[in-house]
Image 1: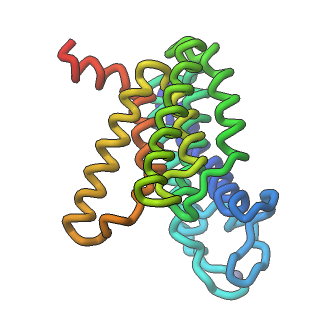
Image 2 (image 1 turned 90 degrees about the horizontal axis):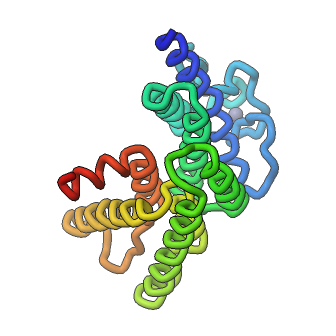
Length: 252
Ligand SMILES: [Zn+2]
């Protein structure tokens, strides 16, 4: 049974990934999601290209009208979502916690798409995400609703201060309002005190990466560090392994 469940949940991740792709393309363009279309010629995609992964696997990765390839982001996001859903199923089984964690994961993937491609973290994503996280804190059992609210507040205030300091030091753009709301969402799902761990992991990963980029001269000292992707990864890792990492760190 476990293998059947795992296969079904993993397969479900593929169309969910296709929906995240659609939202990741349409929401930053400030338009309601519409039927999949080719961004080059504007024609609607045929049904067998609505999900990119099977289209790639069957050799239909090109627009039948203009011949442009479906961008690699589409099958990659579908694959990643399927993999993450399968992982969550193995870890939590078909539980309420699994349902909320899968939703949180999908939201983080969507934020990852828009932040990585457009440097945009949209209120239309983060605000409902925060509401969902507050509802989730009553059902998932991994934090209390009070812990969630304090975590959200700590994440929000920490990144608000970082944004204000960063903007004063390197000018606007280092950290935006979207990052601050993403930090609030991460705090709401990891709770207090684990939000502190999420912030530490984010800072370590972001700092190490920017140091590497500086040393390899891929980046200049004045370039702002995009903290969104690190916050997404740090937040997700803390959501899943936060307690284990804390126990290991404190030698418990
Ligand atoms: Zn086309």
